Length: 217
Ligand SMILES: Cc1cc2nc3c(=O)[nH]c(=O)nc-3n(C[C@H](O)[C@H](O)[C@H](O)COP(=O)(O)O)c2cc1C
Image 1 (tube, rainbow, N blue to C red):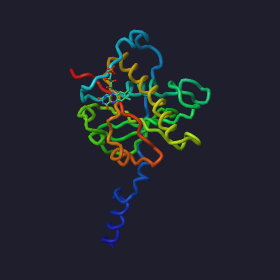
Image 2 (image 1 turned 180 degrees about the vertical axis):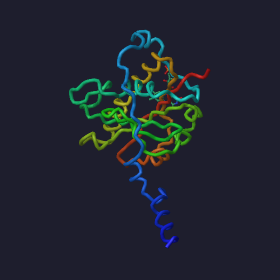
Image 3 (image 1 turned 90 degrees about the horizontal axis):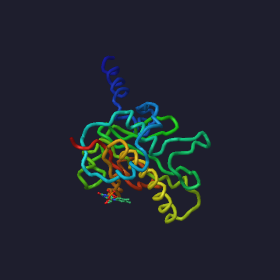
Image 4 (image 1 turned 135 degrees about the vertical axis):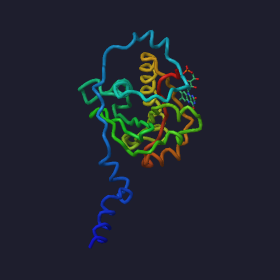
């Protein structure tokens, strides 16, 4: 009797037996604090300070900073059709922003202002060969969902999703310049490995990655 009970308990408790998809659906959600949508440095000062930096402190970013940065990047700034802080082709909002951190991989949900955990693995070392990606506490992975782009050629989809990503990335650059954070966007990415680690579908394409963190002290 005892043996039968312990076998049943083993199957119930061992989460490695639950398919990955089920874990992702019920996974951890991090509620972000309300983004602070005013303040910051004047635009011309921020443009004057914008630059790429490839040195990061491993110190984690507080949730408030993460929330403010993600809103600046790709948050909703109007009630009108949930339009965003960056333009997108036909307002199709094709780009999803994932966050690769020491605590796992998350997807930014702008509407709910939450981070949805995809899995708990730290995949930063798999992103690319440049060493700073492992040190930066946050790596924003921009993913284009080609299924949201209508009837277009692959070439047009690549071009348009690259353009859409550029606006979001520049918003992050400007936010970082305003807050004194370090950031760099890059294309040198181990795409096949990363797409697998992120469990992306074949029509989800990584466009660029952008590392963000504090400057080393
Ligand atoms: C589309 C794109 C791809 C880039 N790819 C890389 C890259 O793979 N690695 C890297 O270290 N920097 C990369 N960068 C950053 C550029 O090297 C950087 O913007 C450039 O040197 C100018 O420096 P600044 O941003 O400080 O003005 C990329 C920038 C863009 C816009």
